[in-house]
Length: 202
Length: 395
Image (cartoon, rainbow over all chains, first blue to last red; front, side, top):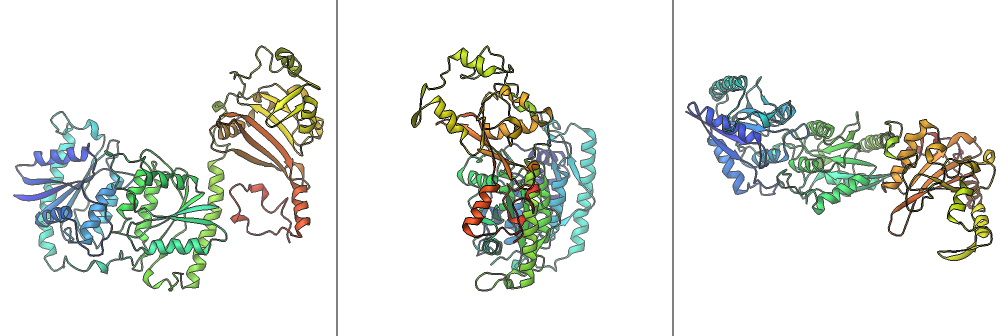
């Protein structure tokens, strides 16, 4: 059975993205093992000179390295992803770069109609940068709009169509993980000096 | 013109900070750029509202009172730093200082990109309805290979780059002038309901049971309250005058004075001339009327807007040039809020003045001449109609 990490893309106490990941975890438990991972307590990234990750960051990074794939569920703030999620990627890329060649699927929930559509585009672009170098599943999206009304009292998605959509996208993702792993091999060094990238300042 | 420059990163050493500091020095003769750091701003968390914390309120106040904002961003992972994202989230959660604020973006990076992708993300974030900044379109200042860009005094070495930066800033100043005029424009929406222009209410000093629109309101009102007149003494802060002395004193002021109270009732003007000879005509029978009766209906929204500015304390004085008096006069209407010792709004002192003789006298006394100069760099108060006409004589 494949092991995935599900990252809750927000630090809010009440999050329908957290609910969505919990549902995904429960719904697919016969198929894949998903561990849900919080980034809410990460310190704000400040580019430390020694390029050392705080313990919390390293702990999550290790889990990501060991996982077969990552599912990220993001809300939308100001047409983009929350600062805290961005902060997580800054820590990761600046230190041990666990996302290099890692298969990633994006989901998202929002209170309104759009289901975090614009945030998902930003997230794709960030994951696609050579610093992060994740392998994002192309041509797929899962957008959960009106997320406050989407779950029943047991935390299950109410809409059959949405559940079918999830079933399809999860099948696709499992396949994508296999293909990606054949494709990427292990030629790229995860530990390539981050100073190669643009964000060295002074 | 006053700008704030926001350093889009919280790192100790930042070339984006160096860039903003350079801009502040380089443009100091024409604009004032205050460079602000975001190091003290905590990570945004909607479950832990810190909007009222000092560092966030400090930024809020600085941005609110600035004419425009310059944001300098590096690029992390093809986007803007989380630290900057967090700042914008705080400033679009409970408070919205960017709403309608002119913003321009600059950025520096170690590679040749100059933060190009981050700037696009920043534009999209600033454009979200919760932020609602007015980002200047078109301009792009991307400073690549920034480690080679500055000399030892931290000035940009390449003169072409400096020239390009100058042209961008010049454009932004013009943009700010236009945007801030649009944002404060009274013509955009019907605001007439925001003020009781018909003075249907009453305040403590309202003289009741006298018809406000009566031609002889002054006589009726005076009789009703037993107003003193002529040689009766009035004690003032600080002095004692007779009513006659007070009248002559006010008539000798070098401007037309009008008093409207906080109930929007026109109570007094210092009748120096007959209506047709005044810069802003008033006739004796108008006194006592609600402000609605003294203005044509199409101007109600503008009148209400001015009163709202003063009543809410957004401005203490609204100044408007009225250019219809010909090239020999420069007539200015000032709407000055009248407040008591505690700051409570009491009404408007409208003083109308032709300031052309004052300018002429000043120039003669000091031997100076006005030159055309750079009208863009003038203050936000400069009106469209001022540019190049009236007071400006080419030197």
